[in-house]
Image (cartoon, rainbow, N blue to C red; front, side, top):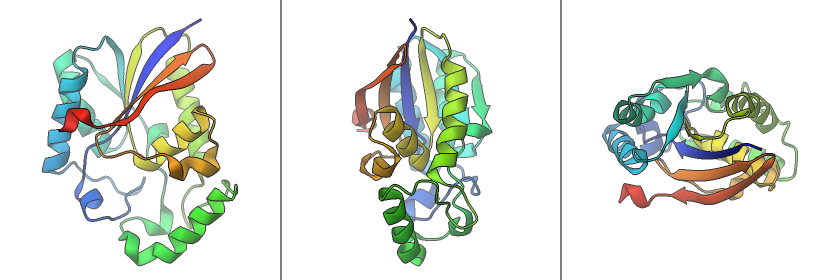
Length: 203
């Protein structure tokens, strides 16, 4: 039975985060100065871990967050499009306040269990979970090690809500900040959280 320690980390801050603008799969924004500092703090927090793999999405903000740790450990970054953020479709690049009414309607539908509902021009939570979970299962298959994955806000909510048994309709209850670390323990088929949304390394 394999035992994997999985560090699920949200990428560092971008200007889109700071300005409360929606950035999904369609916005490939770099880290801002705060995000670059957070990436260094993440590297300092994990440099003594016995990491077997560093994984990122294909997006700049994810890869840039992973780079300081990869440099410290002398390891490559494995990046995958399957781990990109949800496609926010028509909402990409808009301030949350601009589309608040429509977002709230969609979130209400998701919370009622209609998780196959797509954002206009984008993806549904169900679709995002299927693509990302399939990739992660392949990465973890039979591995007995620690892996670091630098991922995205909505994607992390989607994955953790399903893995921890809350269900996708409860993903809104999972809180996490830019640069926050979640430690997930996978023991065979059992999955549990050691800790969630840790930001002690950012202070």
